[in-house]
Length: 202
Image: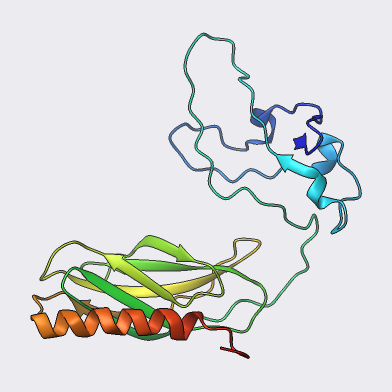
């Protein structure tokens, strides 16, 4: 880890924290900060950390590629919590080449993100996106008309526990008239300011 003063902690071998070393697979890796020699991290000094630095560990003369997604700091001990509730879908609305999915936001402070699933047969679902807990809308750009899809949404907490899925809803994209396209643009512009407004002052 690099500090803001451009000094570094000691290096750790990433391979020692991988429980599963299969290639071409996503892995979750957890490394205690104390293993880097970082102690007593709090709100006052957390800003001294600047970056995570990587160095080649294998000396085999080959090129190795690592993809990173979502590097974050989490509490060392996470308290046991009740299971998250399934989100409630508000609507799935199709347009000409995309589909909007919306759900009722939950008040639980434990939600890390929402995960959106799509199915083309109403049976087999795959994850197609995530949204942070303060967001309650997802736009799926399918790129064609006549595209029918079903959607479900789940909530995920900091420990990556996933809630039951919401009810499924479906929609089909269709060729829109000029008037419908104008309505779509106006709705999107209004929604951007309405949903993004500060709740007290607007």
